[in-house]
Length: 172
Image (tube, rainbow, N blue to C red; front, side):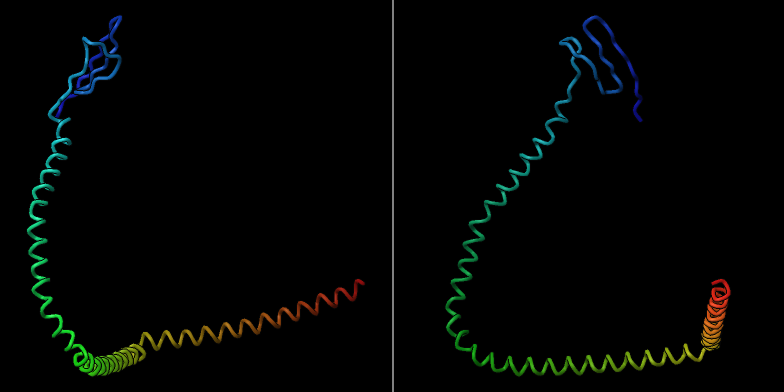
């Protein structure tokens, strides 16, 4: 834990505040703040370190490129045989793709069927639960009450309409 002290020096030429290691104010040659060079040079050293690492790794590039070129040249002799084998590979590839598509379709259909059965079983279990049956019964009752309320509201509105028409006829 660091201790912070505040000290203010005021003279005719100097007006400086020092709080801990921070110095602010008007500086003269006599009261210049101290500067830690080791902290200021760390970023520079980091940049130099990155450059050195890049140069070290770049030294291996020519050997890697040469090795890869040699591999490519060695495989070039195999190319004519591989080119001649392409038509036969294409014919077998078509059959192989068709077989894989059929298998994938069958697998997807089986999975779909299994999920359908599972879902149907779960829905049946939920429907048979007493809480679900009670909720369905309450929902049906609420629908009946809402329909009855709608009918009553329509009748009331028509009765109100007739009353207004009768009142209008008497007035005018």
